[in-house]
Amino acid sequence: MIKDIKEKYERFSDALILEIRYENLSDNRVVEVNMNCMNSKNDYEWETIKLIFNDILLFRFVENEKTSSTSIFAALLKEEDGIMVFDFFPLIYEELELKENENSDFIIKCRDVKYKVL
Image (cartoon, rainbow, N blue to C red; front, side, top):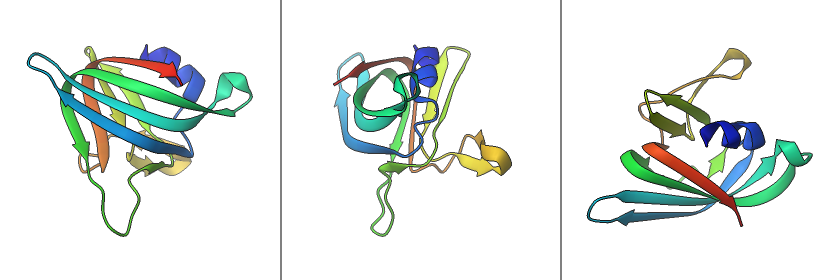
């Protein structure tokens, strides 16, 4: 699923987080993120999508008074050893090389992710 998300939405450049919902069930933690983002497969038209993260290993969201943790410049999306990482505030190096930011304002690590267009 992460491959499909990356093909359509690339790095979520200029995306805007609209809503974050966290649910702690007895056997599963779920995070849902609604966002406006551009679909590269649809001539970069704006879409509102819902990302659904299941089997959460790490969820970190920090909102500071004088910054916005909901306006995304570029996100790191990767999968390693069955763990998916969505770092919405990665470290950005020359030529937009992205690295995971251990102090990211918004990062999710999980074992399963789905999405749907709203």
